[in-house]
Length: 396
Image 1 (cartoon, helix red, strand yellow):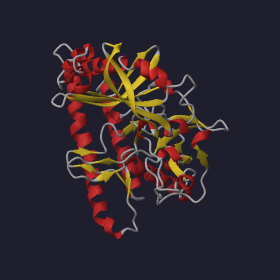
Image 2 (image 1 turned 90 degrees about the vertical axis):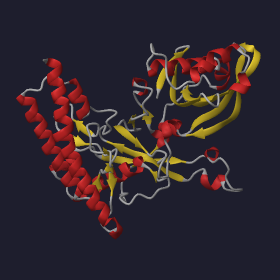
Image 3 (image 1 turned 180 degrees about the vertical axis):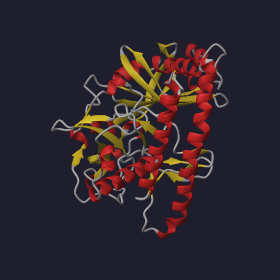
Image 4 (image 1 turned 135 degrees about the vertical axis):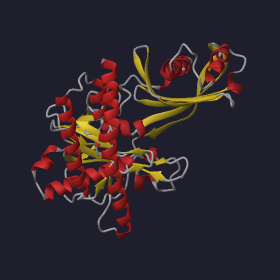
């Protein structure tokens, strides 16, 4: 759960955390003034303090009946942060922060812990246990990965030259809208950290898969400039970044100078927002609609036709969605509805590219094609009718 809480008019952007009732520990990660903080609390360090009497009852998983999950999380977040403010104020600088994309890619990070101190608020104070280190904010992680569809000639933009715009619109969301040095407004899609499936241990990286898909579409645009390609967001350039020596936790002797200027790919720039986080989805439209008349039903059928055509076209160039047995990646939240034209298209956020030259991927092509076909049927023949039926019942 994420949150944005204000202390002294400064946004504190909560991203992650953990509360362990059995182990009597917690940790809370957030950003303040362009700095990453993780605050750890262990019962043995704060036992006997007034803070402990406030903190310990909040470690349970379930909020009180009168509270929502959000209220419960905010109460806990406020408690931990408010008892760490004096140390936070000593650490972070009054300088302007998070101006360029590079600022986000190289965010200073500290680990703190609360300990007993009779001079502190409610008998505790925060002390630094680690840092500063340089980390990518919002799980950003520039990569040395070689993309199969990387164009030979495409504009490259240094992360330090890209100014982030509208970051205050929603602090919980990573930076997206940026301006180049020549005034071009673009939308940044970042390379992010990989994730590991809890049950299978499989490591995946949806951000790199998505970028590969965008680059494949860029190549297709170069090969066949038709009306279809002009309707989709275009890749305008590659964002590069130079690794800094402080980014390496334990480099080998003599490796700092070699690696600190290594060119990394931080992401791509797009001509328009393509993420469901920044545009209206089919799920949003259905939730907000006040009509289920015949005209709206006809519009839904047009959207289905557009999505089916989208899938056929993109399958032909190796772009698929797939998903899991219990969840398709073509769903109400990956079907995007354009605000101006009203047309439907698919987000590439969960797409994956399969190379036709890879003979081992033949079975994957077949499996993903079947899954995407089933996903469209499930969306328009099961989910949508059920949602519209509920809407009609609400209005009756």
